[in-house]
Length: 169
Image (cartoon, rainbow, N blue to C red; front, side, top):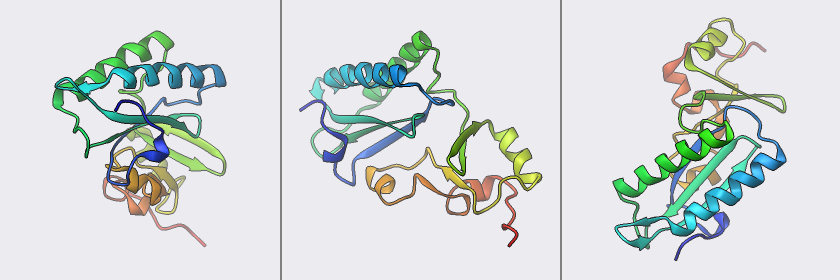
């Protein structure tokens, strides 16, 4: 079937979430949407088209979903997506694959940092269990829709990985 609208993907569709590590401007977002869309038009597993969609949220997250009911992605097709994102990202100066892996919101501002920096912020009490984080490990589109992508740190792997204190009243 090929590319579809992200809203047409079922809740059980597989999801990959990537961050650019920085806010993308409108031109960059348009280029990402167009180029990733062209990749999805030809994305296949063992010769069978994958029904997939992509979208950018909050100006810095690239979400790719695939409906596994029609054709499931294979290891080779996932590798192809990874190679594509690495090559494309290097051309536009954005590393979707090795970008900071801790993203969080303070007010309207989204910040992405590496794990060591996030740990330091937690130890200093600058982020806590109520801090809104973005969980790039959510496995399905339904989890995204259900609020598990953008949620408080205590609802994610962040709570186990970092010394997050309870917020002070």
